[in-house]
Image 1 (cartoon, one colour):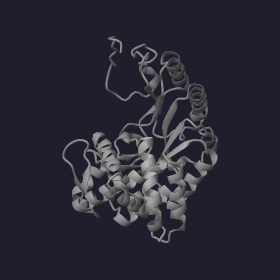
Image 2 (cartoon, one colour):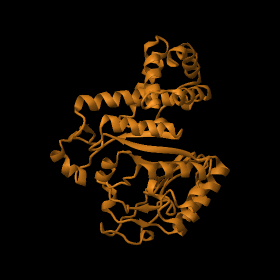
Image 3 (tube, one colour):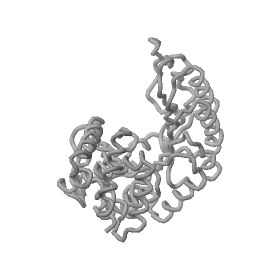
Length: 358
């Protein structure tokens, strides 16, 4: 990074974001060795999610020209670039801007094999023109689902229509089949029971998209934080303010659900790296008559692997990797199982399969 600094004149809300100096175009960053960068398209948010503080700042966008120039500068000055995070609350909300920016990102991604991650709101997945432009094998599109429990979604000021959510996700998968889609859930939202949480996670897995689960944080000053005491919600007093108990789950239940989620994600990580396990998993789940067949099967597989003296070591290594993130979130992108360990899991699965089919 350059030692040159530029101080903004005040802390007031800047309506025209282009008035802010660009650290890229100003040459502040030395990009010669970087592998990951962030491109900021907007600041603020138009939504009013009760657990979030971003919407306290009004939604404003940088101009296309500013964003274009930064993309081109990065392309010219970052020869080792592997990943771009595009910071915008919802790529699909501003359709005219999205229609200009996505082709630039797609061209760069395909030419340089760079992964591009951006976020979208489930309510805007019907904006077909921009959704189609997301059909790129190097795009990671993260959709904020949070929950399928209507009362929970209403409390959080999210789209309280499970069927519309399911339809919109299927629509995204149809229009952008090459993109890697991540469905983002939040565990321990107010009003969410264990039953509704597992039902949401089961549906998310059933779509065959990638899934992530964030452990709810309630930030001081947010609407939800101000309601915590009245709702019987307990929050860690220190950053990052993870919820430790909810109005529907006590501390022991929160811990138990979190631990089982970790086990399920171990299975999900394994099937994400093995075509054989992936095919077997969804075939067995489709024929199962169990309630929530995908989460039930994932938990069962994890328990069988944990009980085995060889594969339990793989699970323990997975958990250590998870713990090293110092977060309670579950994300398939933050851990890795070696090819040798995957082969071992496949071998033991073949021994387990007769028991799973019963």
